[in-house]
Image (cartoon, rainbow, N blue to C red):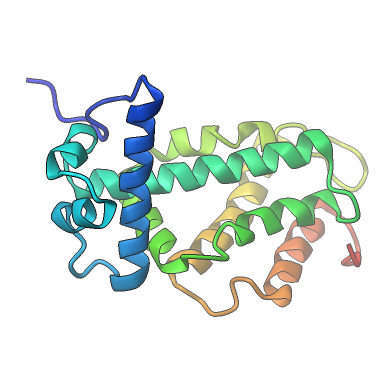
Length: 200
């Protein structure tokens, strides 16, 4: 027998996708209001206004719902960063804009996102997660215009993402502060060989 997948059924029609979205939205609301206590599939179905069968049609258990929530947030962040790379960030330096995109993803429902991200990281294939952001890291150059080596790219990317991820998982109160953003920007620019923190 095949192991149960994170999501039982991939929705092929708009109605099915809408049902999944309703379930995930209800789950996010519950996590934000009550945390993990009382968070179960019955409570999710009740909040979503759907039958328990509808929940189980797409998700085998509450852990799969948490992972789906986190995957949705990760994809939204990836798209936001790619948009910055493709379209620029008028008035804001690109590195700062990308850091800000991550932090702003947690500007609401921080508890729900923290719980969901924790669930994802506990069982995720971290290499696959990292691969989603390869396009962001590729082509990075230092202050002299020289491309970074694979090791340099790895160290810089993991240092900044690690700090941001820790801030989320630890629930620090300075996650959305200007100082935290500045320090992340300073970290990246110092690594790349820039001498001072620019105002943008």
